[in-house]
Image 1 (cartoon, rainbow, N blue to C red):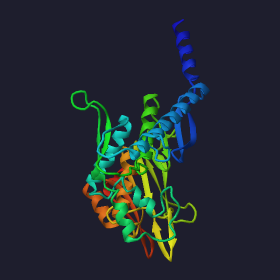
Image 2 (image 1 turned 30 degrees about the vertical axis):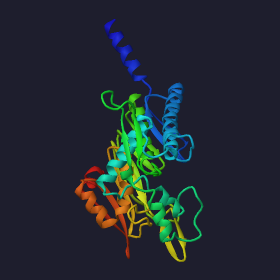
Image 3 (image 1 turned 135 degrees about the horizontal axis):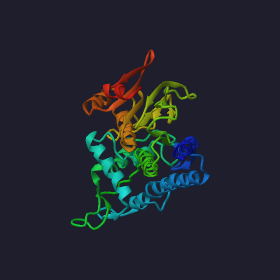
Length: 339
């Protein structure tokens, strides 16, 4: 009888459903998302639950940090008067705090208050200008720029009663260079809480992977060649348990009187970048950090950016325009993480 019982158990074990790779896609935050998850089975109810959880996680962030939704926390803070603490959620305050930290680390190369300058050059919600901004227009916009004017605090029962933001002048915060990465992190945390440990999350080009693919191999991520006409792969990397963020100056730009103007604005000069760094990819455990650092390095350029990456031991891959096409620069940390 004992032998029969063992045979029965073996048969039951053999009938265990095979893992299934499920795909979840949609639109949010003015962009698209794609999530690939290895799930224990093809259970439709479980799949629907995960789909709803992913979408709700992203909707929650959009409702807090969007600059296109008038009633989002961030939009209401941007309209609020200076010198008064404005109550926000922990999530919004945490993202602003991380943004301010990277601003300080980079000496202002990353600045979430650069929005007035971005808009002035025609890369915001306003229409493209008919001419490049004058010095007077730049000076006026600079009056509303400066991360040093912003503070973020988290509620502490012993010190501060509520989580809030404060601005000392009429700055305009735009978290688009870090919020998509944060959204990726939040979806990854949600999936992990559901005991799902093999996935790839992508929101607006920001990516985070965990575990391995069903075949036991690392996730394969393509890095595009930084050209404006079409999508061409420059390199393919195999990675696991990491976030990947890429920033480039080759897609979003305009031309005026024979000059090309990139959408990446240097917060210090108030002007589009003009160096030869075409694309930078950052690997980091957190997608929000990778997202912000990619923008930071894009502003700094190839020399200062690569020195910054080496100084802070960042995993970075750069493509720099040259007479030969593109030169590759990689830190040792990047090489160590890529398979």
